[in-house]
Image (cartoon, rainbow, N blue to C red):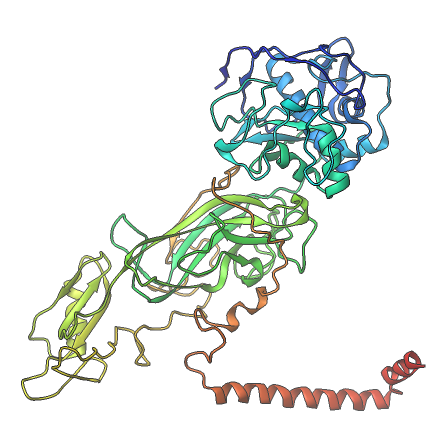
Length: 601
């Protein structure tokens, strides 16, 4: 639905004549009605230019406009100019079906032929327009100050400098609107500021900004460059995702407050499955990739460290499917390279319930760090979240008997007639119904003057100050407080409570929460901030080498001797391989040795 606003009676008092065509001060009337319009998905391939006839948008109109308006700029500034000018043209087409040929709109005819660089800038940004929150953003721009220079590249003394806005790092309602047009309420999607053409040149030439960096500098860090489609715009690689599942190795919470429930400090795993519904292939290449989708990570929606996993991002390289295709030929699976779906991560994202009870929300979204987005990254697809209710599962000091904690968050001490861990477990399963058992704990009550045993085989003292022995919850096998989560679930296997979902193509019976959110065009969180990460994930392949919270200590269940033995075996194998290699080399004339000898001469 379109909303009309009062006319904006703002007159441009002057313009620097060194950029574009020459106009005298006061020649650019800017009073017209402003309409907030939804950003179009279909490209305008033709544009009627008043007094000039109908022109091809991409091959004629825009190359002329950016040559006239900012012809002396280099490629990145021209690309930013092309996107802003296209946004202006689209707004005019959507409101009156044509556009004027003057600074009241933008200049098409100035007696200059489009330069090859201008044609390239338009070609490399075909169909791209500015948008915020689903609204078409009007690409305001002025000449600005020819004296703009690094490090700030800001305008100070140009006739039009007071219209320019500096919105680098700003998002949402904090973005400054320009007085060149209608100023709407905070967060108004149509007015996101004004670009300086001289400033754009400075940002490219002196600070090496890309066109997307330039646009964010003036229109806000959350400005979206939207790709339209049409006959004049060849299909581009697009990043689109659909959330398919979320799951955890923890028990399901019986209630609406959370998805799962866990005891304080309990180790667990989380997982999220996505489907590629765009045309760009997802991967995470070494270093920083250039193509769209070449550096895909799962990143916390806030950009801050997640309280359950202790991390803020996971590389696609951790997944069973680390090459996620979106074309029609891709199979609808998640456990093989080239499938349409992928699950973060293989074996699950290792997590640990915090010590303090409460409901903890783990929120994530996909993000591409490829160089296609300049110095920043691009979030895409829906934001997904998984809530875990954390409860204290400790027996009271000097407590004894049988106690059960249930998946609806309740706990209770059971009958004193229970005399064994096995009996405690059996009664606990009944006591929690209709919920399930989260954990049970049994400590034998010691008769006066005698000793007793706990469910884990330890003894219990009657001294209230004595520490309680460790309990043995159902499922434990090694005397530890918690059973180890599954680390290598079989794809397509029968789902079990606390297990990992299988990879069936329909996967309708997996133990997890179904989802169908696509999140197309969803903005980043208002408090999200880039942290300087560039997609070069040096530690991506070493995630499973260290358990959560272990640092470099020996992992549970493995001794230093067994670890040394593994390295010793590896060393022996390596030595044998080298001997065989040298023997083959000697039989074939030792080509490698000859090559080295020549290099040393």
